[in-house]
Every structure is written in structure tokens, then in C-alpha cells.
Image (cartoon, rainbow, N blue to C red; front, top):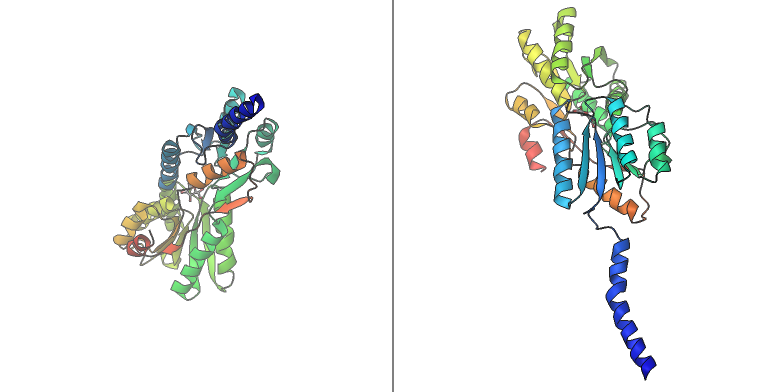
Length: 318
Ligand code: GZL
């Protein structure tokens, strides 16, 4: 009889505590309670600011303790922030938005050696894939191809193009350029006649465009391909100050789909933009939780985006 009583009590205890113990192993499926370091490039563009705000809001909504670092465009600052979090020893994971592709092997190895998972977001790193869990990003090559395909159709494959380049060495700039060239190389009469970096910054985009307009005959320029909307908006200002009509005398296509580019579109001052979603925080946090729960993840989690020539079309897709 005593054995029966003991077994009954044991069964009750197991029913009460095993599920709780199991839950302890499973992380909250949205990451509540985790401490995650987010190394952000900076605030060089309106899209970047939207991306930062979206990640911070997503972390707050999930109950994630987000440690945020704005590197002000400096890889050195990004690496220092990651090393500080590793030294503190209290981060469950790190999310890195790398400013350029090279120079990450050592710090990623240090994180791996300490068992701290790293998720890459947005731009890419040239590092061994074993050093990070996954990358959440758009397809920059596709973005470049979309921009070029629209321009080829708009000009019947005849266009001298000014390219406003993003940050040299960044995946976003290098791959958008590659995708753009993939398409224009299909047309004998489409070529880039000037290409200079504006570092994804509005004021630099204006300065570069003004310099180009004063150094070549503006009537020879058919279009501007800007690697982001901020530089396109800078170019619009320069084109107007040169007495020309942006989107008419000189076509303009860019990337990001920020609110200001739709204001310019409404004013008839730009032609097309390729969407880049700022909402990569959710997929990144989901990847952290999945990894910590022992799940296998693909090395790339893509976010999509289309090309828009009007606010109405963009809004219709929301
Ligand atoms: C691309 C991203 C780029 C944006 C710019 O994913 O890295 O950086 O297109 C930003 O606005 O500066």
C-alpha cells in the first residue's frame, strides 16, 4: 500500500514539474528575456534610421533586452562594441549590420569561441559561413537588375547613365552595381558614363551630381541610377539647381522606397524606386530563438521588395 501511495505522489510531482523543466530548456518563442547586442552601422540614410527604429520597436514588443550600438559608419566602432559585449559575458546573441564586407573574421571567431551566436542583417560579410548563424537581407543583385530593367524598358535600351555609388566595399553598393551591369550589358547603347560614390548620404549625392553636371554636357545624361533614395534626392536638388527638370530631362531610379522618395514621385521629380524592407528585426530575432532552441537554419533568410513608379502602387501592396 505504501508503495502505491509513493508512486501516486511521484506521478503528481512529475506531472507538475516536468512540463516546467521542459519549458525552461525551450526559449520563449519570441525571445522574451534574452539579451541581444545589435551593432548598427549608423544613421547615414532615412532607410537606415527606419531600420533602426523598427528593430528597437520589435525588441521592445517581444520583451528582448536590446543592447544598441550606433557605429557612425565605422567598422572599428562596430568591432569594439561586439568585443565589449563579449567581455561583459551577458549577451545571448549578437546581431550585426556590417558596414563593409571585409575585416570581420577575427571578431566573429572570438564570438564563436565564446559560443555567442551572430546573426548578420542587411549587408554581407566576407567571412567563413561557419562564423555566423544566418544572414537576413534583401537580394541586392536583384535590386540592381530591377532598376536596370525598368530603365532599359523606359529608354528602349538607349541611355547614358550616371551612377551614384553607395559605400565602396559594402555589399549593398557592390551587388547593386553588379545586378545593374548584368542587365545594361545586354544593351549595346546603355552605358554608365560617370560613376562616383556618395556614400548613401543625401548631401554627398547632391555634391557628386552637381560636380558631374558641371563637368559633362548635361544634355548627354539620360538617367541617374542612385544606389539609395537619399542620394537620388540629393541629385534631384542638384538637377533642379542646374535648371533642368528631374525625372523628365534626366530620369531617376533608386533603391529603398523611403517616404521622401514618394513625395518626390508625387511632385514629378523622380521616376522609380526599388523597395527595401526595414523590417528585418523580426526574422533576425526569430533566427536567434530558433538557433538557441537547437534548430538548423539556412545561411540566408531573404526579404523581398518590388519596383514602384507611384505611391498608389506601393500603398496597394502594403
Ligand atoms: C541596403 C542598405 C543601404 C541602404 C541605404 O540594404 O545597406 O544602406 O540602401 C543605407 O539607404 O545607407
